[in-house]
Image (cartoon, rainbow, N blue to C red; front, side, top):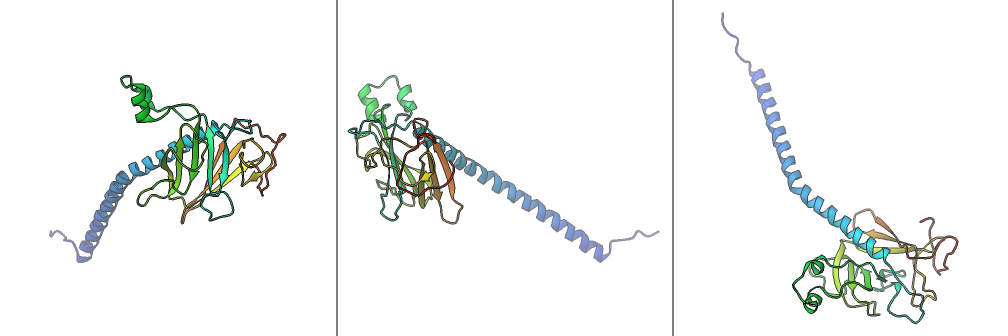
Length: 240
């Protein structure tokens, strides 16, 4: 009895199935390679973002402004640094919660003068500034929200200290402050007639072709509450 061979149609079907299988394997392999290459980068970027939020949260929590009207070394000022809008586009404040550099603590061999040269002054009152306009030269293709820290604070909220890019690709920042009753877009302890600081700050980070990112930070050192609000000359929103 003769064995039946494969027909042409059966061969075509078998070849098609083989090609589909090879294509599926190749696609799965490419997806795996792309995933293994991009995932660490995305994870590192995500971890950096979380760390930057924690850094800013810590600095905000230690916000300090004395109640002495003659004190010009402590302040909380939302200002228009670029002149491109009618609302504040920068925020400068003094804080007591800047962390001491780990390298400063671990170095047991250097003198105090050497440590001060390498790490700068540690502890005490620091000036913190957030601005999308860099004070120094940011370098090529470096744009976003910059963080500048100066220790000790020198009473000049426009210069000094060290600066780094905190949140990249930010094109605009909206600052809002809780006054005990509503969100307002202005706060100035130097020229505003009051030395009190807000209990919460909300940042809206805007990037091109992306949804806005909202960050809210509490300031436990504030005495502003719903029962003890402060009046600011600005429009506001609802609810903290």
